[in-house]
Image 1 (tube, rainbow, N blue to C red):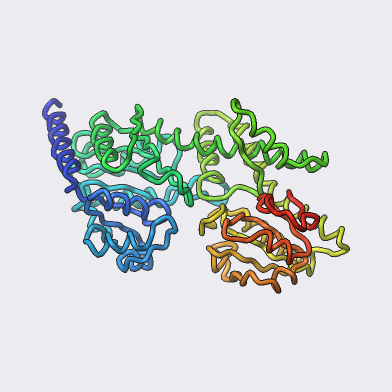
Image 2: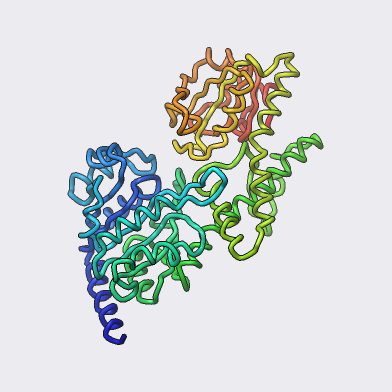
Length: 448
């Protein structure tokens, strides 16, 4: 046993020397919204980076210097690719030559809101088939507490190697916030939990090369729970303000005025805003991962489940609000022309994952509305991966706006001139308070 311990420490010293000299080869598995920015950031830090993805189109785009992620500037990617710092592959074979392997694959939900770890398990299997002594493997995909040690660790050790002695395994959750210009990757602190102390030590040495603050925690499970807590905190508080939105609507009060007045208090409140629903990969998904895991411990997450139910009501509330507005105009939803402004899940991004627009547009179409949409970041909008039918973004012209029975604002993109929209529209339902600065024509606007 002491020999194995020394072996592990010696491997750690060798790898840390490579990390400190930036000669360690970094492999990033999964080149999506998390993986590509991670690959670029490590290459910018001076590491030679290989990106791996099964999607051949993504591999081609990366190797041609074309960025498909808005937060990754094309000119930066081109410079790294041309300089030989970053190369993408469809094959997993480069994993064998990597010193650091970062797994950034999706963790979606199944149809019954159960965690789908198939991508994580598949990636871990590919790593296990090529693992060698001295490698650091970091799982960054958001998942429930226990995944790293109970699922990934046995896969990686199946070939006879031992974590902490032959290789190093950690969980370090991604904290990507698409479209955030204030906090870029180096500015966002990195939580890291290692399977063993030496695993943690090696991983912290690696992440400190590119991130200003690294926060070590006692285990991968703590790091996994930290990420789930962060997103559940947001989901619960959004649900609270959305429930206030529903109540204020019944009471004839303006929820936006209420929230903005409450926000003037200098302590004891963190402002959240109502909206048409929650979107993105994290907030609508992560709480269900925790709720599912909690059942293994005989625990029912009532508060979290209730928040999910309330947030799920928001898209239907928007549609009912729209129906009420049309009725007051002596029109019905069936046959009405609805122009949707924005289908991305948040402003100034091209990400439509779990976007509330998916459910809202689906309900409008199901009820016979003629729906068109404008989104400068989303040229094509598919309601689901299973559907072949998709919508294409229309030009934001005076004719399109004036021809709509109602303009429905679902995403408050900064590039839209909302005063101009109001001047040309006949009726507007604003689900994001995008028209807050509009001065002329406010009688046309209804805010949720």
